[in-house]
Length: 468
Picture 1: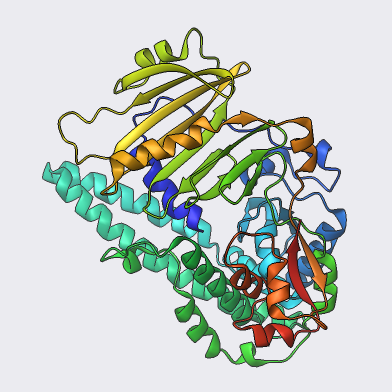
Picture 2: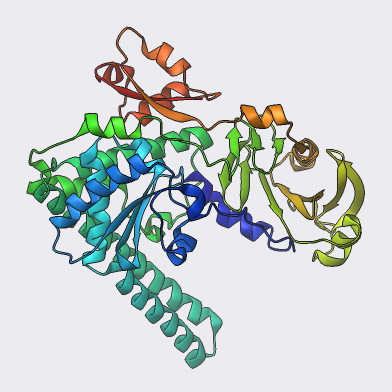
């Protein structure tokens, strides 16, 4: 996902900040009313989606696939309350698919393929094998550094080992695909469902690149990738005979199951609406610059500008005693410069800059703290482009836009949801115009339905659309 592509970079850039990112209180099992996870599993993977009907449907498909695998089980299949497309399994037989992946999937067979892939990993014990290889890589690097007396040698050994580990992981992905195909064919689903699932993920990746623009590739990005590219996976699948076998699709039942499903973050996480972030539970919001895209996660909100300027927002319940400008001067290391005491949204605030010394070629960084009840909310802002000085001042408008939401604003905030409709009697342009996004409406609609052109869209008897 795009968010993850930037998160590691952002963490490194702001490592000097002493602010800790506070989590919003997770939704508890008793709040959800659906079948629950053991607390230790929920802490690892996050809350499940609230719909009992959808959970039951997903579990039925998963159990159908699991029965035709060679694994003893028992298995439990759940929908995670997460809009990022993903599927994974953890120990004790729990297998998960996110709402984000369900939105892209088009039928039961593709859902079965996602579960089949994860069960393939379980059968071959890939996670345990990767962990053993990772420990071996670490041990070899440490031993090489000690024996040679050189950290450079140790790093070289570690790099070579990690490259081997990533190639090993790619082989495991292909193996899980092959096993997954055999599972779904034996369960009675169409054999090419793994292929069409990967093609849909490929369309999603292309949409993300359109939305954000592709990241510059490093020379060894392909070698460092843990997963094989979609082209490699598709080529391998086309060589498997079971992948060409006919079987059930279950499209009508699948679309009925996802009709009404949220495609947003949960209200407990807040909503991204264009360049604005609005949190109905915490009753707060802010607006970034128009060219920014916001990516919401449990720990905070990442904003990325077209010039790769970065914004990070989060709140913490941590008590900050005394004045915020004094706390910033005493606690943030290296100590910010140009610290100012001010007000934002009617609350106490403090603003500081990361020291640049005499080197004006360094990135411009601002820290902004805002008192919020017993805790604080904060912005970290970074600009590193040729126009960094002017840009960072413009980005401060996002921090200064921080405000509390009124009762009416909170009441008006509802998640966007999938609606299944017939495209008959409409046109692609009119259907795309119903998508509640500020740009790329047609591309989003096509990707949601797994097609490449408006003509293909209109050939479908039912389509998915997003509506407020």
